Image 1 (cartoon, rainbow, N blue to C red):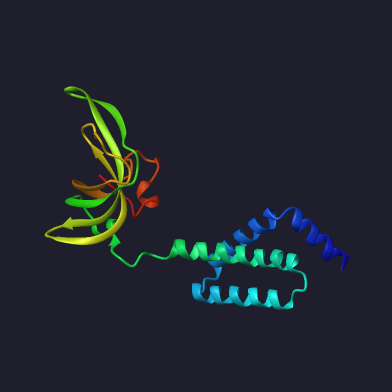
Image 2 (tube, one colour):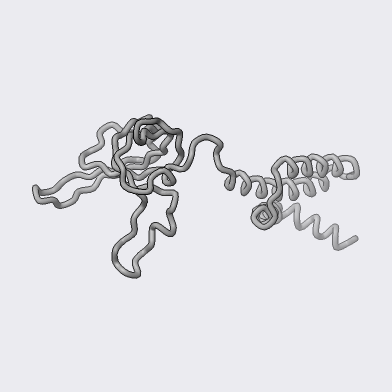
Length: 195
């Protein structure tokens, strides 16, 4: 048992390393062997009860409980990231070609302004991202989800992140550069939509 005592002392002094390793192992396990989140929660409760009942030393029980707890936290974190929201479909799935739509959503980023050369001289361009909630496509409103990068040909005065907006925009699938060998946005960002 001297090895176990030495390992416990080391874990008590370096608690973040085994906890981080357990969190990463939980993410790996969730990726390779997913099972329902309720089963993982039941396993955690049973493990907690077993440690309290069978452990005469409470400090060692806390250490042994923290490791599976962070394993489960990593596992559940991955499951949450993989679960799709129940409301609305992906905005990109609705837009197979460029269309004029009305978007309702929340401003998800700061407005970026830049200048560009046009035939009339310099023009200001504003760019921002909108977290879409609804879209008027055709003649009916649909609940959607997706982040849209919008470009506006003027200065966007007074827009702040978190504001609710209704915007008339031309949207289409994300395009890639025409130069051979350049970065392929369509392969990387299939759910993204650009204007």
